[in-house]
Length: 290
Image 1 (spheres, rainbow, N blue to C red):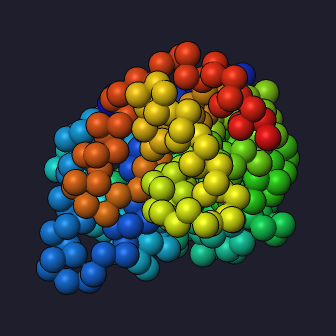
Image 2 (tube, helix red, strand yellow):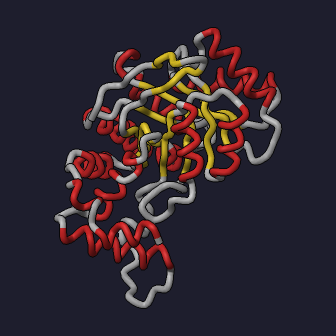
């Protein structure tokens, strides 16, 4: 896909330019805690690297640290300067617990520093203590940049407004079928904050519900957009992966995978360009504006 770019200084804010696509590590922590699960996790991360992915995101919450450790096993076999890695820390932790969490993530990932550490799910809590620790670690080079992650775009928007963050990870609220997070992305663009989105290949996008009687709005929308896709030789998952990057704030899209075949299939979709005339289709515009 693309080689990782590093951190660029801009005004008083550190600006990230991560690769266009990354591997989200949640599924790695869900695989069985046995030899077969370990082998499948290793093969999945290695397949992502082979496919050209150079951005890897994890969290201590993925399998109680198992996801980070599995990711670290593979990354240890590749030059550290050749990839970006991020993890997360609970936004509500006290200062000493934040340090413990970061140290644990570094140990499991097998790295001396992470390119980005996200404060996970601020949820209206006071995050000053946690942010202060990460800011200190950023100054020491242990953390390359500070981000905030979650599904509640309004809470993330509050943090972007009030704190100097380098990146935002928005889960499931900016996609072909859900564009609720647009105001957050607009603020990120204005403040020079890199936006990363995840959760774009939902069951509706994968057309997993084949019932013609469904009244679920997202499934109905997915079918209507899929009909437009067919006219341009584009698959719905292909369009879903390409859509977020059309917003100027979106620097990267995370792809989740639990097998080498899954990540290879997603990588193949990424390599297939979506024609610009598809995005200009009047029916598609109506669907996206509705």
